Amino acid sequence: MKLLQGKTTIVTGAARGIGAAVALKLAQHGSNIAFTYVSDSSAEKAKALENELMNLGVQAKAYQSNAGDFAACESFVNEVMKDFGNIDVCVNNAGISKDNLLLRMTAEQWDDVMNINLKSVFNMTKQVCRPMMKAKAGSIINMSSIIGIRGNAGQSSYAASKAGVIGFTKSIAHELGSRNIRCNAIAPGFVETDMTHYLKDGDASTEFLKKIPLNRFGKAEEIADVTLFLASDMSSYVTGQVISACGGLNI
Image 1 (cartoon, one colour):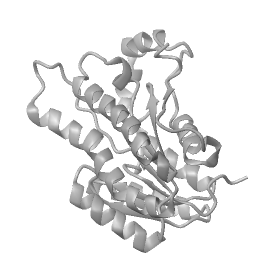
Image 2 (spheres, helix red, strand yellow; image 1 turned 60 degrees about the vertical axis):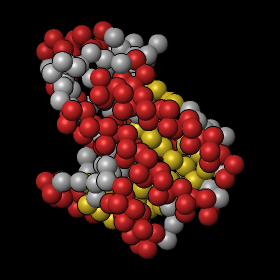
Image 3 (cartoon, one colour; image 1 turned 120 degrees about the vertical axis):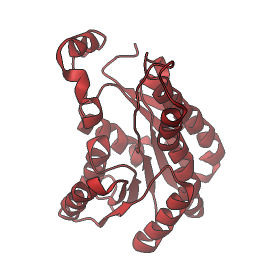
Image 4 (cartoon, helix red, strand yellow; image 1 turned 60 degrees about the horizontal axis):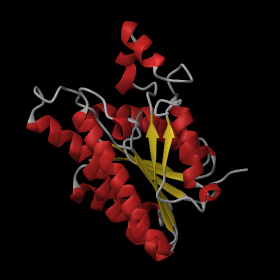
C-alpha cells in the first residue's frame, strides 16, 4: 500500500544523505517530489536523484535554491506550485555543521549555521503554510537533532540551531493545528552520512558507540521511515512532537 499516493512533498537539501533517503522513501510511497540542492558541486547528484525518483513513477524535479535565503525560498515555492499544483508535505532537512569550541568560533561560523539550520525552517514554513492553509491540510516535518536536546561540546552553534527548530515546531503546531496542518520534528542521533563520517574512525567511534544503547550508528533510511510516518495519515493525530531516532542516545 502506497501511503502518499498523489501527494506532493518538498524536501530541502536532498542531494545526498538523509534528504536523499527521505525523497526516495516518500516517492516509493507515491509522493511527487520537489527537492533542493544549493551548490553547483551537487548538481550532478541532484540530477541523478531526480532521474531515480522519476523511475519510480512519480513526478520529480530538482531546484537549485538556498533554504537560508528568504527570497530564494519564496521563489522556489512559487515554482513548485506552478510545476506541481499543490504542496502537501514539507520536509525541512537542509542543514550544516561548523563545529568549533566557543572560544575559537567566529561570528561568521555561527551565522552560517543559524541561517541554514534554523532560519531556513522559518523561510520554508512561512511559504508553504499558505497553500496548506488553502487546502486545509498539510504536514510540516523539521529535522532537528539529538544534539539540540542534549547538547555537545564543540557544537554550541549546531545545538542552538537544532534546539531552536524544536521550539519553532511546537509553536507552529499551536498556530496551524486549527487548519489541519501538523508540524513535528525528528531528532536523529548519529547517522551514517557524509556529515558524520569522521565519527566512525578509530577511538572516536568506540566512544560514541558506548553511549548508544543499540550499539550502532543509524542509517539514513531509518530516519526516512520516521519521516514517512509523520508525512502520512498514520500520524494524523500527531502534532507538536519531537521523535528521537537516536538508538536510545537520549535515555
